[in-house]
Length: 443
Image (tube, rainbow, N blue to C red):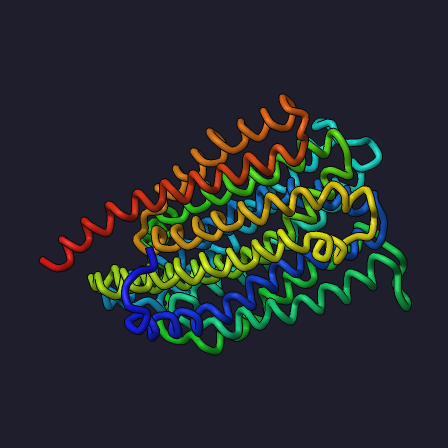
C-alpha cells in the first residue's frame, strides 16, 4: 500500500511521526501502568498475579466499552474542523459525556462482582478477583475524564500534555503499587487491594490534572449540542463494539484457561502485556491517522487523505516487522522481565513465537482501522472484528486448544489467523472506498 516516490512522502512521514510521538508516549504510558501492575503482582506472589490476570480481563471488558464510545470524539471533531465548523463549544458536553459513561460502566463493573463465584475459577482466587474489580470500578471516573479530554485536544492536534501526564503516571503508579502492595514505611501490606487502590488514585489524578489544564485553555460559550452527542454515539458505538469484540477475543481466553490453571492465565497475561506494549505504537499512529484523514475528508482533499493513509500504514508495517523479529529471536529476554518462574517461562516462550507473527497483522489492522475511523466508517471496523475474532479466531483456537491438545498455544494461533483475516477485509474495503472518494472529490 505504501507506494510511490519516498521523497513525496517525506513531509507526510515527518508530520505524522511528530504528531504521533506524544501519543505513542502516552499510549505506552497507559500500557506500562498495566505492565507495572503485572510486574508488582508477579513479585508479590503466584496468587496475586493469577488473580489480577483474571480480574483485569473481567473488569476491562466493561472499561473498553466506554473507551470505544469516547474514541469518537477526535474523528467527529476533526471532520467538523475540516468543514470549518466551530468546535470549542463542544468542550463542556464532552466532559458530561465522559462522566455519564463512567457512572454507567462503574455500575456495570460493580454488578459483575456478583458473578465471579459462579464462573468456575479456582476457589482461593475468587475473593481476590472480587476485591480488585470492586475497587477499580471507581477508577473509571478519572480514566474516562482523562481519555475524553485527550480525545478533545487530539482533534486540535494538541497531544503533548495529555500524554506526558500518562508518562508521569507510570512512575507514580509503580511507587504506589510497591508501597501499598508490600507495605512500605507507615503503610500496611495490602496485596492485591493495594494494586486496586493505586489504580483509583493514579487514574483520578490523571483526569483531574488534565481537566484543570483544559478549564484554563477553553473559554467562551460552551452550550450543549444534542446533534454532537448523536454524532458521538453514532460514530462511537461501532468503535465500542469493535474494541469489545477484539478485547473479548483476547480476554475470554484468560477466563477459559484460568479455569484450567492459574499458570496459563498468568502466561497469557504476560505475553499479552508484551504484545500490547509494541501495539501502542501502531495504535498511536492509527489515532493520528484518524485525525488527519478525518480533516482531509471534511475538506474533501483526496490527495492528503491518500498520502496520510499510505504513510501511516507503511510506518506501522515496518515497525511491527522489526519488533516481531525481536520477539522471535530473543523471547526469553522479554519474558524474564516479568518472571523468573521456570514453569511460567516455559509456557510463555512458545506464545511469544506466535505473537511475533500475529502482531504484524495486529499493527496493520490498527492502521487501517484508523483510516476507517477518519472516514467515519466505524461499522466496517465492528464487522471486521466480529468476523475475524468470533467466526474465525476463537472457534479455530478452541479446536486447536482442545481438539489438538495445544491449550493456550492453540488459542494464540487462532488469534493470529483472526488478525490476518481482519486486515485482509479492511484492505479490500478501503481499496474500493478510495476509488469512490477519488471520483467524488475530483469531480
